[in-house]
Length: 123
Image 1: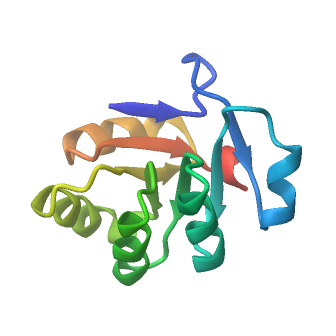
Image 2: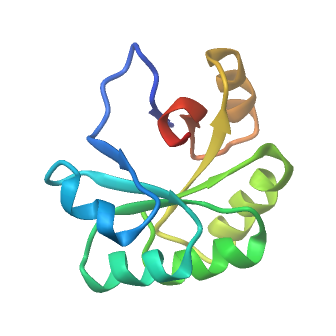
């Protein structure tokens, strides 16, 4: 199980961005996180930059996975469908539920979701 943003568990360097111009000011070797934006997805893919995408629906999930997203971050309303699709089509990306606090980790584990990411990392 992946836990990103938990104060008790160290994680990789993460940089949250909104547009391409912000990439140059991120730490080297950071995983870029952003809300679904096809231009950003394509840019990261073309430049072999590791990235995670907050997706709002299954269509965005599928598109982001086609461009080698590392993480596909979802709200609870679609996360179970996203996980099932990712397993069925053997996505390389990991499905992460966006959570508010550590109490939600149990639900993530019981529902066999790849992991969780704290909302504070992506807001």
